[in-house]
Length: 295
Image 1: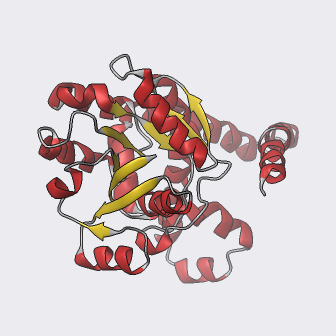
Image 2: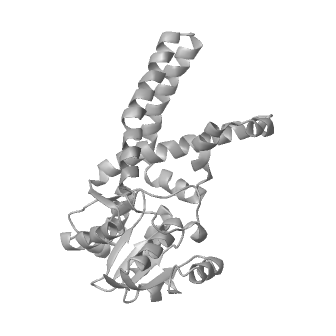
Image 3: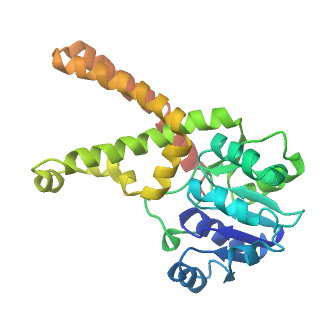
């Protein structure tokens, strides 16, 4: 499908994409761009990429360039390669914030706007780095493509076809809708998990609290082990939407706090019951559907 694919950032998402591109024979040559020699060597030794090159050299002649870095690292990279990439090159990303990135490209590297396909695979995990990458990460996972007026449908179509060839389910939506949805369903839960762990770790009996924590606590806070730099960047680049989501969540904290403080059994039961019903009818049904699709 592509003669040369350059993946900038060979961590969990970038590395997993490289693995799947190779497995499905969608790239003749895969080049990685890494921040450290250790990561570069691991990417080569693991067979994730064919070679690791300097940013400018890696982008030269690349048919597809994938940004798989923290959000705030993307613009500096784009500035460096703006005048170096070929006219026929497609650029895409795997970031979870779209409006800010689009505005940054439009303001600072507008020449790249008509070849940048904004994409977001809804896949990942709490582990990060090249050794966390794995085959099949995107199978039966959604990939969101946020179409923009500047990008021809032929280019976004090629990126969509690539993801579909890896087993992903491609959806299209606007920049604003994307950032609003994932501020609530992804960014907010991560902020809450980080906050809960920090709250407990600040207690005087923190060691005893963690020693006695049950499985539910570990399940709930698993995502607090996610890459801190990546999530800092997400909070900064999707600031307004995340603050809005936090405000809405705070209202619910206040509701249940009032119910507990008043000893209002009826209100507490109704509140918890509504949440159970919503989850059972929504998330669990989705999980069952996805499980049936797995090979």
